Figure 1 (cartoon, rainbow, N blue to C red):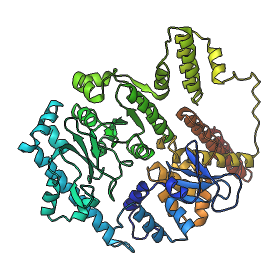
Figure 2 (spheres, helix red, strand yellow; figure 1 turned 45 degrees about the vertical axis):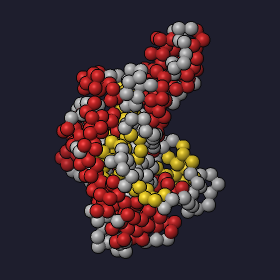
Figure 3 (cartoon, rainbow, N blue to C red; figure 1 turned 180 degrees about the horizontal axis):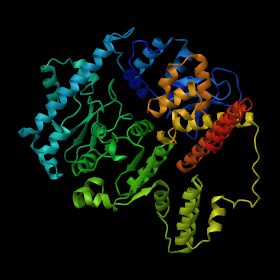
Figure 4 (cartoon, rainbow, N blue to C red; figure 1 turned 180 degrees about the vertical axis):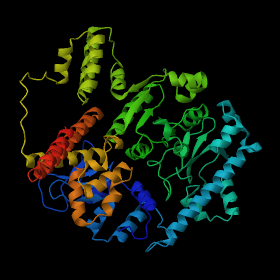
Length: 568
């Protein structure tokens, strides 16, 4: 179905478009948990059963069972074929169609390339200017921030001249048209005049993971305002969807986590001192798009914001966004008044490594003390009430128990009192039901349900791929899908290559509900599902061998019964 589009290009397209944004243009959605819900556009219903999962980039209706990728949604809604739907989404994402693809738009592709070319030329001009007499003040500023010439070259830092049109003259002199420079956000046209966007600023080039210069961040020298100025949105740049230093982080996946900072200099300083995986937001508070982008590079994010009150509040907001996209999150709590740049220059990499990295719940409980005098009973009571409110969101019983024990120790409140305040009642004491043997059909039905649960856990990244094997699934589309996911490939690409019948059989197995929230419970569900599947397989093999034994002679029956015993 992909036609002349390569798998790599289609992966790039899917990563650039948000299925939730696309679907919400047709269906009002309301987020609940990890999914967004609305009334299904494909059948009449009064209660929402249509869901969109921004992480797997799939839609699915639990009523009519229609589902698939963002491309397939556009095909259904706009009555387009695959090629037409891809073209529509590529135009929306400002992604040029590959050369030789059907109905390619060479004008849009050429414009993007011209903008990339202008950005590269501007980055070189800014960097060269830094080493001139005009850039002396900016160079001195960078030296005072602890950077060496090698650091400056490594990050491609530069300086934008103070003149109103120095960049304009430089780039038009290289053959770039004013229209291209305006589209790139390098110049601004107002009241009939044209002038440089960046003037008298230290320049930080913003480079994509693919090595493209997307735009720039400019820091003012002295007291000029605004302190930081960023490239406006262009056909190649959106500050809500990108991250500074992602081009370096792409090569550092072995770190297992990303370190998220708010400032360009924070990112530069931490990296200079050997901290890997550091990325920065682009002059905005953390967005869901940036969180989803980070999830492609690491399963965990360490929030590394300033140690002042504003930084602490921003860290709490960041935790909510990171957790809503399924990322594990920790917070580095810097000493009051210090930011990451200050800290790393004062105490070095060893000091950074020694900083406590708080878990999300632990950090929220730490911040619950803010503004309270916990040495007084009233303050302690308010602190405990705040903590209990936080702990209501903890799904894992083990994690909850750890936090409650700590809270009981520091507050003096009895554990049972705290559990009641949280809203957790002790389990009723009942005799465990005696196991009963199930008929063979019930055993097979349970195995099918277990396979669906297992495939959904695998698809949503709730269990490691090595937990399962393709052979744990029945031969056919489910096994093929499992093998695809185990290899780390995108599930939407698999669905796009299936026929209607096979897709209809796979989709329910990718949307099993209910699922546990915590990783520990997900692994436990996977173990239980595997036990059911393997028990059913053994039962089927026993049934087959018993049928053989019915017509076998005495010696053959003896061997068959030995084979049956080996299965248990």
